[in-house]
Picture 1 (cartoon, rainbow, N blue to C red):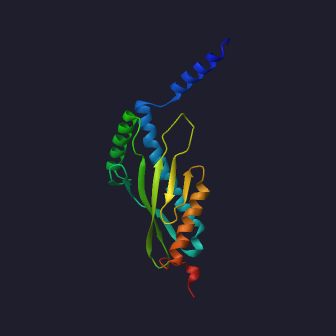
Picture 2 (cartoon, one colour):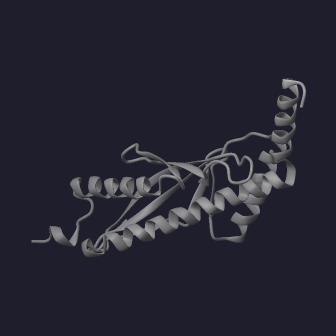
Picture 3 (tube, rainbow, N blue to C red):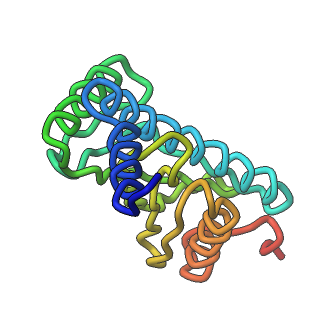
Length: 179
């Protein structure tokens, strides 16, 4: 390589080739949403196991809402898969678009009292393979925000902080609180 400009051209060409477009981008967008919801489900299950003595259960709600269109769907349904496929294709074609969704985590105490913890989820645009995370999650009761999957522990801490806030408000009770 004789000219330093050649290095910049090579970098630009490599970077442009690695960027996802069209059907590959649509598939990556759809996968990002599904993997994020799966990870949140797993993290909720971990918190339930950790809070077993207090007899709390946490579960990601089945319904999700696309904030750009306010369409509410059951994330386990065929219509969700169809919607997600169309949603991803539209964003891939435009190269932009809202990627914000809402859902809730349902927390149930030993009395079978269930409260909702609202979540806002902003999904990251996929980049090159292995780059970036999946989503940024905001817990509405506390305003805490975490990036997934890199801050899975932070997600669990934020969920427990919301549960404590509900306890302090008298809306949920731990088995340990019984006297």
